[in-house]
Length: 286
Ligand code: IPD
Ligand code: CA
Image (cartoon, rainbow, N blue to C red; front, top):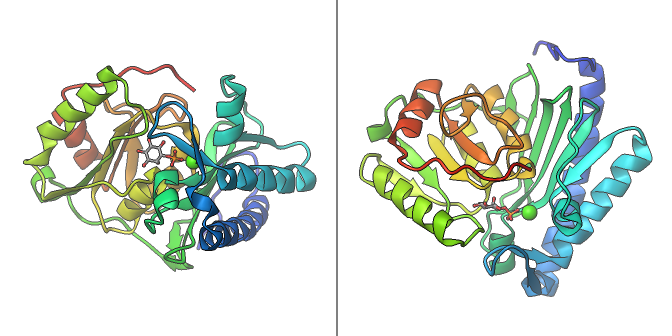
């Protein structure tokens, strides 16, 4: 493989972060499995709505990963779901090396033991994603990508499907965790607009698993309003390194802090999906 990390950090450095991130992801996966075997995954608190859950395991994994990162790399920065939601403060995303982490993406699945949740670890430098690691311990699936070096599932290269048309696409849509009336109405209108125009509609309950499914060719397109940077960061790189694309729901470049996300096997398919959506929510940025 080439070594084409074009940002300030050399690929040797990003490789070191990758190895470190993979070890952390596997450790986090073990914590998830052990929590489930003890039944503590079902002890929840709610955040923005009754469908936006957090467990002690989410908080514990985030704390563990942040302490590992800051111990090894004291000058790096961190952004994580649980720290951000408990502080109520906007993310201070800078050009510095920043680890953007979702300790458990798919917490609702985790709570119910539906086997599609994962830890998601992304790294940005100069606001570009340079590393993505996503690990689903239930299916033992480790997705990895370094910028410019392709995407891998358990060490084997992966690629998006050849699907170019909406009427042949397996499309993913999510209800999401926000349950206000504007959001509910937008989800209904958008789903209705695409549901009979594609091969089928799915909802895996984890933004990272949704996006990685497109990266390995098992699904073709996905949209959601209301995601956060930690839901998108790692898997966005995995998808683009697998030959796919990520974009704003209105077709421009993806802004990780803007909470609007289309992922697709090609730019063409992403644009087709964008044009079919009747409602493009504008949400407060992260
Ligand atoms: C959620 C999942 C879900 C998506 C929600 C996210 P969480 O993340 O990715 O699929 O629909 O919008 O918040 O809360 O499980 O980390
Ligand atoms: Ca989460």
